[in-house]
Image (tube, rainbow, N blue to C red):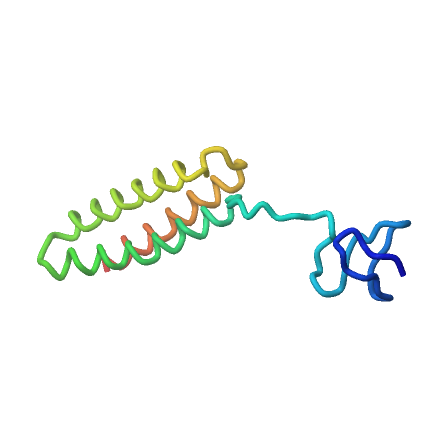
Length: 123
């Protein structure tokens, strides 16, 4: 068999389109695909970042504020402020340009964790 464009000899397992190999078994990527190794963030990454940060920060602030003897209302205000900062940070990362569904889902998750913190503080 003739040499492939990449200099690798063709085998039976290669996926061919006419005289062009479009995939090979040893890489699972087409020959013409050359990754530019650029980071392309997607909304789910921003969503997950906000979710994880909120899940860690909210309980830490609620427990920390009450353990230090601050009032529960101060702790709730602190948690609300943290939620606002997390929303702003997520929007700055790129969520502001994401689809409306992602923004709504992010707002709902932030609100959910804030609500859980309020329930814990007021119980």
